[in-house]
Each structure stands twice: as C-alpha cells, then as structure tokens.
Length: 297
Image (tube, rainbow, N blue to C red; front, side):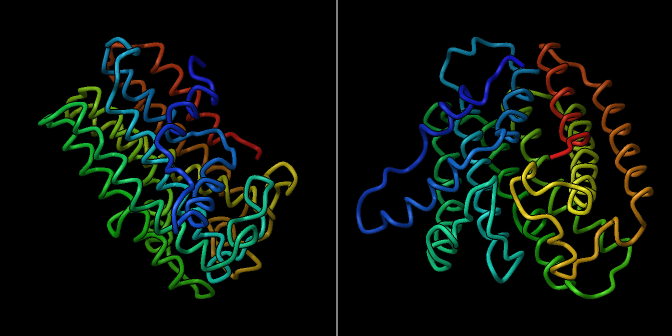
C-alpha cells in the first residue's frame, strides 16, 4: 500500500483544534477520540478514490486533504455517540476506554457534537485552496448529505427506535444501507468528485460503497458473535446484550456469511468496470475493500 497510517495521520492531525481556552476539556476529549488509533480506512479510501482520477502531483496542496480530515471527524463523532450509555453502552473502543469512561458522559456528548461541527469547518477550508471550484461544492454537498438524516444518522435513528422490537427485511436493509454504507459511499464519492470523475464513474462508486458497506456491517454482526474481544478491541456480544436484531439473528450464521460473499462479489464487479487514470490506486482500493469484508477483527 502506497500510503501508511502514519502518512495519513500526518495529514489529518494537522487539522485538529488546539487544546486551549474555556473549551479545552472538550477539545481534549475530541482529540483523544480522534487519535485513539485505527486504520484510517475512510481517509485512505477517499485518497485512493481521488488519486484514481486526479492524475496530478501529490506534493501540491489538495482540497482532498481537508475532506480526509473531515470524514474522519464525522466517523469519530459517530463512534463517541454510539458508545454512550443511552446507545450501545460500550466501555472499550480500539482497546482503550471510550470517551464517556475516560472523561464523563456530558463531555462525550459535547465532544461528539463539536467534532461534527468542526468537520464541516475543516472541509470548508478547501474553498481557500480552490476558490469557486464546483468539484469542491459538489463534494461538500455529498459530505453534508451522506452522514445526515438521509444517510448515516437516519439509519441510526431507525436502529435505535426498533431496538428490542421485531423488524422486517426492508427496515434492516434501510438501517444497514444508511448506518454503515452511507459513510463509505461518502468517502469514495468525495474523493472521486474532487479528482474529477464523471457521473458514470460516480454511479459505479456509489454501488461499490453500498455493497461494501452492507458486507462490512454483516461481517461486523458475525464478529460480534464469533469474534474475540482482545482482537476486536471492544466487547463482543453487544448486539445480544442490547437486544438488537441483526442479519445473523434474522437469518442465521451461514446465510450471513453467504450474504457477505454476494455483496463482495457485486462490489468487485462494479470496481472492475471503473475507468481510471491511476490503475495502481484502483488496485490498492480493491485490496483495501477486500480487507474490510474479509477481516477477522
């Protein structure tokens, strides 16, 4: 892989707020969560999607850098809130105490709120690099839509409302498509748009993001039953503990594994149809996506 986690973190950490002033405790909690580790999958996904189409000198200042930091802030805020006692009530995230445990519940709520706001403040910095650039405008529109009510947040809302209640196929698909796939789609689309991809390519990438997100979520359901807490860096069995219906509880383990394979095949088929400038970036994106749906942690 051409981009290391250290390289990605050097880019995105540059956009973090300084821990000073009356809000310093909240900022400290924001940065604690943001710097807690992980593979930086969404920023990497966005960067590879950008490079597939941009075909330009990577040493130049790029609007995609702002968006990479922004999407990781959005992802991090969602994790902080997911871990709260009112939602999943988890004490560990990536092997470390969750924010409401390391700080307190009020600080965790506010840190999540602050990260979401700071994400859009960060993405908007791209306009100073490319004044009047319609690609930046379009990417910002995607960044505001996919994590919102018509995307990730909408999926979370229905997921919370139906916790402990029997749900149907349509409802479960809506939750998974929005709660998980939307942010993966967002990363791919923002990167490709900023790189100059046309509408046909954008449509294919949206399909890829949708299928990978669905496979990723069902794989997560499988790991919540079969996984190991030490490897995962978080407790297993949280779905059963929180009385949540999943693809596994609805269809069984074998059907869940078959579904992951089917969604993966659909994603790879769409990926093979992409017409890009940087074929190495395309191959590395394929490798990254496969690692998500075949993971054991």
